[in-house]
Amino acid sequence: MTKAQTGQHAKVLQLPVSIDTARRATGRERAQQRHPSALAGERTARRSATVHPLKPESDALAGAEAERAWRTRAADQVAEGAAFVRERLTGDYDIDQFGFDPHLTDAVFLPALRPVYDKWFRVDTAGIEHLPSEGGALLVANHSGVIPLDGLMSAVAVHDNHPQQRHLRLLAADLAFEYPVVGEVARKLGATVACNADAEALLSRGELVAVWPEGFKGIGKLYRDRYKLQRFGRGGFVTAAIRAQVPIIPVSIVGAEETYPMLYDVKPVARLLGLPYAPITPFFPWLGPLGMVPLPSKWHIEFGEPIPTDTYGAADADDPMVVFELTDNVRETIQQSLYRVLARRKNIFQDY
Image (tube, rainbow, N blue to C red; front, side, top):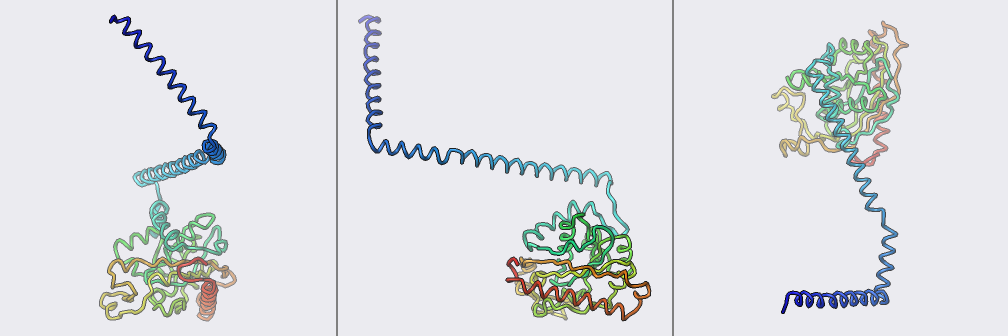
């Protein structure tokens, strides 16, 4: 057999196969088109195509937008971090005479506290409009919680909710500055010793200053005495406010009492360690370091209406009766505010 014949034979075999296959395929397609089940499937496919044509595209657009927002936030954080490092290295920041470092506070301390403020304690605030836009004011609050977290949360509340993002200068006990690391951090965060001289100096400079007159009696009280205000000392904060001629703003804090519910105070251990109290809670010391994690109670901070002091003269700051009367007025205002907030509360972990 010649090659030509072989090639011709190959061509003859291919043509019938191709034609026959095409005819069979055409026949199947026509049968499917005539079959009711195929027609029903076609109608279902058409309905699906008209109902959901844009959903994947919408999801893709939403995902792309979220990714762009995330990239923008990440870029901003990187830029802020780079600017912070550059400013720290070049010394382009200020520290006042009390050791307050607003640059470090805004870039490090407040961002570190915000997750606790927003996610753990879920702090609500009210009455922020009572804080002045400028000039000094003395904030007086109830104290509680074994560990003074209420001071830190108050600083975040004022800065993040005030239209001018003002810093809150805390007046703390001497004990806070006796420990090397704690004292240094407290100074840089804006805290200073709770004495009249420092308070008057800050108020005269137009700062927002906060004080917790109950002191250790407030944060160290037992759980059964929660939200019952202790004695407000000798009213030194009133003297400072009158001399600086700044308003006193009562502040009530609900939620801090439940962070470390102290059931018992082991006084012999406290005296041995030189501490104001030695707390026993449902979790500490039984769970060790884990027992020091605060309970995620729901917090509410309310800033009351300012109590003016500009109607008093310089001599009134040294009048024990005037100081006592104004101190008692502030204390009673805070106590009544606590009762009102507690009456609205569902339980210690839920929103109001």
